[in-house]
Structure formats: C-alpha cells, structure tokens
Amino acid sequence: MDIFNKIGNVASETYKITAEKTSKIAKEAKIKMKMNELKSKINDIYEVIGKLVYEKHTTEGDVCVKEKVEQYCKEIDEYSKQIENYRMELLNLKDKKQCENCYIEMEIDAKFCPNCGQKQPEIEVKEAEIIEENNDNTDANENKDDTENNEDNENNEN
Image (cartoon, rainbow, N blue to C red; front, side):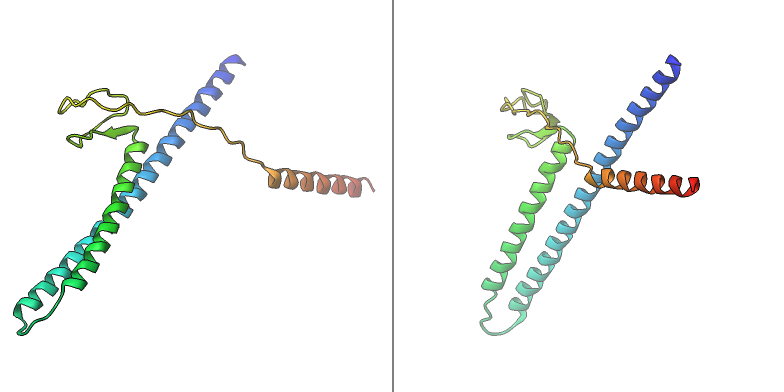
C-alpha cells in the first residue's frame, strides 16, 4: 500500500508542477501577443506620420502638421509605456531582472551584471501569500446533493 501512496504523491506533485509551468507559459504568450499588438499600432502610427510629412512636402503652401504629429507621438509614448510594463511583467514571470546599465536579462539574484560587470541593486523578495478560497458554492452543492440523496433514500424505503 505504501508504494501506491508514493506513486500517488509523485503523480500529484508532477501534475502540480506541470500545471504551474503551463500556466506560466500561457501568461507569457498572452503578454507577448499584447506587446506585438502594441508594436503593430506603433508601426501604423509611424506610417501615418510619414504620410503626413510627405504630404506637407508635396503640398504647395504652408500646411501645419506639427499638432497632428505631436498627438501621434504622444500615442506612441503611451503604447511604449505599456510595452515596457508588459516587458517587466515578462521578466517577473521568468524570475529575471534587467541590468540598469546595459539592459541585458539576468538572474534575479545576480549581484553583478554578467555582461558589463555593473553592480546591481538588491531586490527585495517577498514571501508569497497563500489565499484560501472559500468554496461556499461547493459546500452548498454538496448539502443540496446530500438532501436529494436523503429524499431519494426515503422514497425508496416507502
């Protein structure tokens, strides 16, 4: 019997690890997809800006595109900030950090950059909080099932 318990425990642990890795990979894929969408939007804006500038060049007269270009540049800045936030999220998922000097990815516990040798600031690692889920719905459904089973048993006895 003890061997079956060990096999069960190993299988459970393997499932848990696999589920965590799969979840992490799925999160990374979603973040990368969002980043690519934002990069595509930025490229579209670059194209619009280029057309505006060229139209100004080819149009006779004094056409002012400065305000439109400034507005598009602000949009690009906003998208760039979002991309940077997603990139930092990806680093956290991979348990990595970025060198402040050369911007290379490195292990989160590295004290010096393996690329440029720059001393890295220490990052506080916080313990993860365990939040227990309240399964009120499950308990309610179990109680409902128990009640139905009791009623069925009483009907069968009658």
